[in-house]
Amino acid sequence: MQDSKWWQHGILYQIYPRSFQDTNNDGIGDLPGIFHRLGYLVDLGIDAVWISPIYPSPMVDFGYDVADFCDVDPIFGSLKEFDRLVAAAHARKLRVILDFVPNHTSNQHSWFLESLASRRSSRRDWYIWGEPRPGGGPPNNWLSHFGGSAWEWDPGSKQYYYHSFLKEQPDLNWRNSAVKEGMYDVLRFWLNRGVDGFRVDVIWLLIKDDQFRDNPVNPGYSGGSSHNRLLPLYTSNRPETHQIVAEMRAVIDAYADRVLIGEIYLPVEQLVTYYGTNLNGAHLPFNFQLIEAAWNATGIARIIKEYEAALPQGAWPNWVLGNHDKSRLASRIGEAQARVAAMLLLTLRGTPTIYYGEEINMADVLIPPEQVQDPAEKNEPGLGLGRDPERTPMPWDGSLFAGFTSGKPWLPFGPNHSAQNVAALRDASDSILNLYRHLIAVRRRNDALSNGLIEAISAEGDILRYERHLEEQKIAITLNLGRKTRQVSHSSARILLSTYLDRDNEEVTHYLSLRPAEGIIAEVNA
Ligand code: NOJ
Ligand code: CA
Image (cartoon, rainbow, N blue to C red; front, side):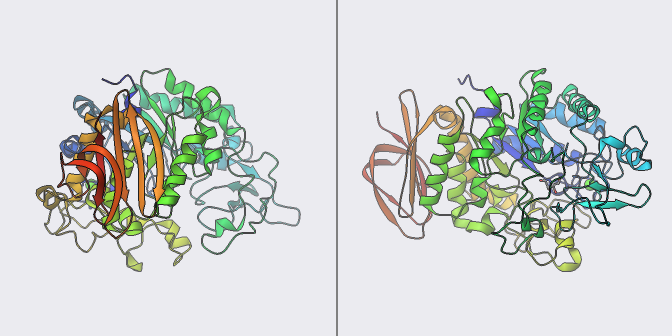
């Protein structure tokens, strides 16, 4: 049917592997767990999984501190189990995307240990080292995303090294061509094992100012993460970064049909520059605008229009509603509107990414202080920066350990997991899980939804509407973002799906009535 690429018409699903399925009862999810749940993913209807880091790691930042880029941490399994997972996924037509973490390594990575050993080490320049300021203190005012100075003193060599995140996550020096080659070989290692692409961690932070200029003070700072006291002018989105993204893309393009996705938090005009000159950058610079957006029709209509207008010629859009770093959708906008958001995500133009558990309306889980795991919370407690609440284990059934483990789960389940779990929602015909399955099926059956143009984007009061067009087919989407019943004028059409799952094939003539938090997909009569 389509001649678009799989990563254009396909649906991505993010798995946080610690929390998906445990098989050896240590309370932590693992690769055999994902293998075990492939049937669930096929049934849901997604096309590709992106798995957050599985590499050997001291787990100070839960895998985003990589000690060896070319192996699997024993907590998650082995290379053999990884190969088995990829083969089984491919046999079921599911693609596998890995998380590539090029900005930094663990301080336990052999490269860093060698770099640390002496100023004369051949790997010294693989990391970013700076002299103390005259009179002492770090080279400049750069701040870590996880609080405090981004510079850590090494008493042995009397220099500081730079870390964008934890001091246990020293930044690689991407101005060094040996680093680049080493990391491109890492990409090839996994591409040769059959992975279908990468989600690249903090791709917009790879290059830092070579003159180490101070970041300017942020005049708009009004509390929250101390990192935001400064504007990251010299530590993020540097012009030289694009060359590296293009080089990564060239590595990927030597293999057929792979995808390069970049994690980027930037305003839309800057975000879209990561498609690269002549689209030689990331296939999909992740678009997180809906995560940050206030949930109202006018604002969201504006976001869609501005994003569509900003896309370079030929660039393929994408949309994300949640991830392992941000508060869960149901907690941000409520369970009822989360159904509307699901319809939005799966009917917008562009590749959708679903975060595991959104399909069962998982909410943020309150973590008692003594159970906090996330270093972001430990370093700056009480500011709401912790990410444990959105990383809790997937409840598969109503049993004591929710079918996730028989051990002690590494993070607690939500309070209502005995009712709100995959098995229970699978059986409830009007559940959000079944809404996701129907939405995905409708999207798959109607090319206009995956490949068509988006037109007539508008907002009026609580109602957000747009149409998807492909050849003769026209599909109208009408979403009620409010709590009241609304009536809108509508072309004559046939309903394909309501978020309430009870209006299939209803004919619409002149008017459409929407219940609170109801969304409707309707095929306009020719
Ligand atoms: C972004 C990742 O999504 C986040 O979880 C991690 O802590 C930082 N990058 C550092 O790798
Ligand atoms: Ca396990």
